[in-house]
Length: 117
Image (cartoon, rainbow, N blue to C red; front, side):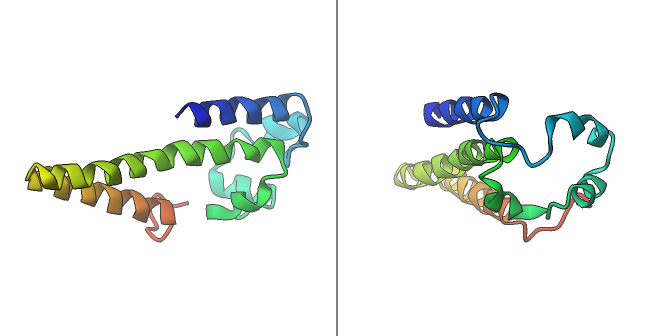
């Protein structure tokens, strides 16, 4: 988690001090605040889903990487405790942890369309 926190801080400084130029100029950000996500993505010509992976050169999208890393740690932690739960014969908790991993992977994959985005 410390790596993720440090990465967020580094990404912020790269953006804040203009070391990496943003995809959306800071002077234009306020005009997009009131938009729905679909309208915003269309206005700034950004694809939804995992397209942010190709925008690592932009300071305003670089912070997505450490956030995704930190979110992924939840999955790693659940996977790590499953063998221990099985050894302790905590079948219900093992199944719940496995289901949690499957739900998180499904949600992260983008295969489950929900929320109207």
